[in-house]
Length: 116
Image 1 (tube, rainbow, N blue to C red):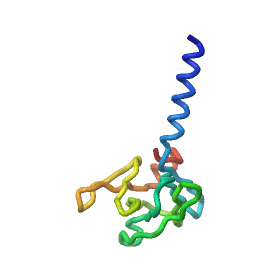
Image 2 (cartoon, one colour):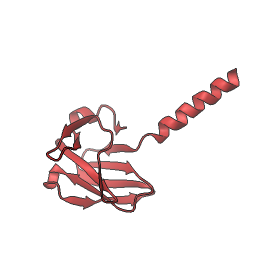
Image 3 (cartoon, one colour):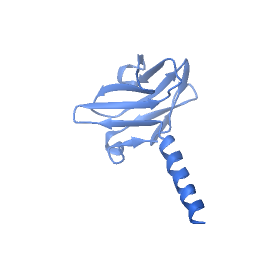
Image 4 (cartoon, one colour):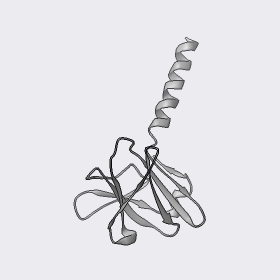
């Protein structure tokens, strides 16, 4: 019985770690967003910071990285291999095209340090 419980706990921990596909690191002057999509060929970051112009993300070992100056709130989504992707995030809004965007708000996000 104890062996089954231990196996169950380890499985839950492993699966919980694997589910973290969208996270960030916020420093004093820089925000780095990560999107884990190891099979993706191209990923673009699209945000209100530049009127929703697609900016290429950089692949760093299967996690696509975007570096931004730290600052105020903005909305965003990704384009992964030509398809719009809105990852799970704490705050979302509807856009004008029937989809959803994430909202990064440093006042909310600094509490957790990651978005799942």
